[in-house]
Each structure stands twice: as structure tokens, then as C-alpha cells.
Image (cartoon, rainbow, N blue to C red; front, side):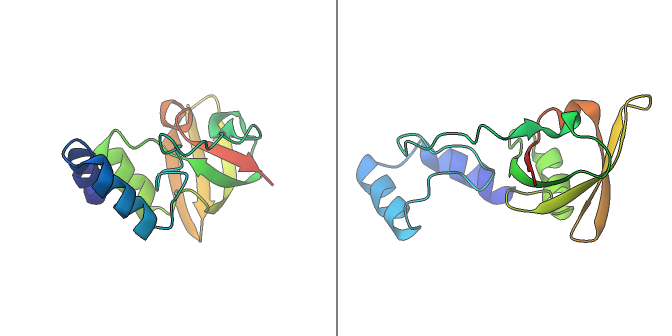
Amino acid sequence: YRAHTEAHLLGHAISSYLETKILSKLGNPSTSPYGYPIPGSNYVLNKKAVKISELQSNTRFIIDRIPADDESLLKYLVENKIVPGSNVVVLTNNKSTGTISLNSSGIESVLSVDVSELVWGIPV
């Protein structure tokens, strides 16, 4: 989350030459660490990805992308291993309480429906 803030600030202050060199050093990634396409990479979002709020209890999925605009939320997601590429299971999707509970790498966490609308996953 700190790196995200610094990268955002740096993105407004570097030349295209330096940007090209940095991308090359990183292996020319097509997505950000949060799963969003890097401009100019021609990356196309996975059409199988859905908002995890749509997933039923006991559904396994892989995190595709997470919101990166809220630093405290991003910190929570990272600490709970809810990051792109993670294998996650929906433990419960409780519409009446407006919560969805997850297990990622043995860590159980709870998200509100509003937050689960911002996290995308690919069912497996």
C-alpha cells in the first residue's frame, strides 16, 4: 500500500524514457500489482472475472483484481492475503447481514457487500 502511494506520485514525475526503463527492468508487466491493466500494455481484462459479491458460499476462486484507491482497505486486503493470484474460498455470502466471509491461505476475513463489489475473482 505504501508502494502504491509512492508509485502513483512517481508516475507523474518521470519521463517516458525512465518509465520504459523501469517497465523493462520489471519484465514488462501487463497489470499493476492490484490486477489492473497498465496503460499501453494492450492487456484485456479476463471476461470470466466476476464481482465476488456474486459468488455463493463454498465457491473457490482466484483473485483477479482489488481496489487500490483506499489505503486502509488496501492494507486490510493485503494483510488478509486477498491479492491478485490468491486462491480464496467464499465461506459464507450472507445477504441478510450484508457480509461475505473468505478464507485465503488459512486466513479468515470478512468484507462488506460494498467492498466485495470492488473485488473481482475468477471462479475455479
